[in-house]
Image 1 (cartoon, rainbow, N blue to C red):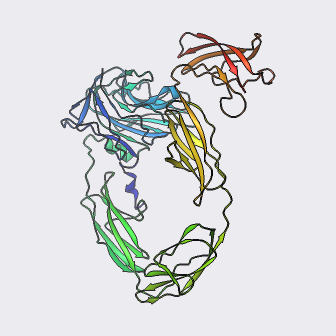
Image 2: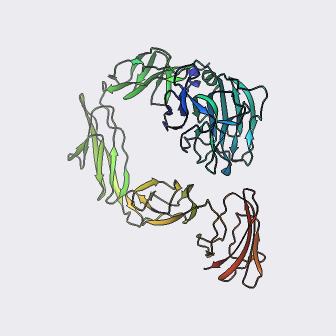
Image 3: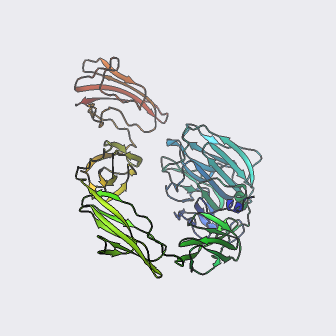
Length: 558
């Protein structure tokens, strides 16, 4: 067995929501996105402690934890304790938007636990509907865990695997902008439904799957996260280079682990032995039942106790005329001295800052307490970098629904691309910028090559309200990437039939697919039509309701 096998139990790893309900709706996870209790009242918890769970009345009560995705993409584990006698459909934990085919809900269907939802595959997924042997509406506390890992959906009831199903989504995703709620479901219409009738305690959400040992801890009704103090460790120290040093740590409970650097596990147990070759920091913590203590830190520095070494090797370099640059030498000890020309001191310290005006040679050596090292030299040559920096290629502007998340891509042959808003504030750097459009906005981009900036380019996004059908009356199919297609925005459309005629009543285009726009060409031949007014007849229906008819005109301007 691996020396570090206990690391598989870590109830802090991937924890993106921990709702203890011990007097409030706060989130105890590292993310700390707190909730709002709506009419829910505190009650006895799973271990009969006062005010350590929430009671939901089945009519108006729920807890809302905002629409933040909490870093969840296509993998999630949801754990909850429930107590109910209700036989109706009641939702325990939900973040689900059926209109975009994404999200999950942990529910009780006639007293049977069910994990269900959609993951971008076009079908509704459910673990069971229902399993007659998994009733939990007996007025006792029961533990349920729902786990989604890409296309695998599984449900555990009281520590036992209840059912597991798979989906076939090509790009599984649970990401949506609906609120995470406990105790009900908020529909796309804004209506609140499927209210829970009973008590809910200790809800945890992870952005990963759990091990069997971790699930076993969570379904122990008496389990509480232990409170661990940081280990008591060896004092900071300084030793000679290449010293073999044994460090110690003592913990009040749990297994002790050593990391260096932070995040890299190197040992476990009360001692760690290492050969010290450079200044190094050790991070020490203990783990009990998957809970981590605070971290203690030991700093070990090295002293020069041997021969006089020259500076670490520095190389010749070429820079732009007028460019400021740094040359760095990091010795283990001593003071670095820089000269140019030889015998003319420039500065001391690990870093030399130079503004290049001409070719120049530098000399560097180290003064130790025991003597002075040999001198080494390097050259800095200059080149003309006055050619203009080409600006980045910006995305095309367009119209987009309010609240839509979007990823913009820029193109640049060199340098670092900066994204700015209209006030000049830097939004991001790099070729990609991710945001949510909430209003009309103009973005500005430029390229920085070693402090030299390109011209600035811009593009504009128009935010539109897509909640009601949108019937445009003009478009410009000139191939510039802006408003090149004539199409309708009809949210939740379930049928669509469009015919477009010229002014003599001759049909030029028809389609029964909402996403196919007209590009201003005759459908049968592909030839462009002339500018002017064209007439359309549209039949559509929304959410399966009776069809509606809309007629109107659209003007082509190139």
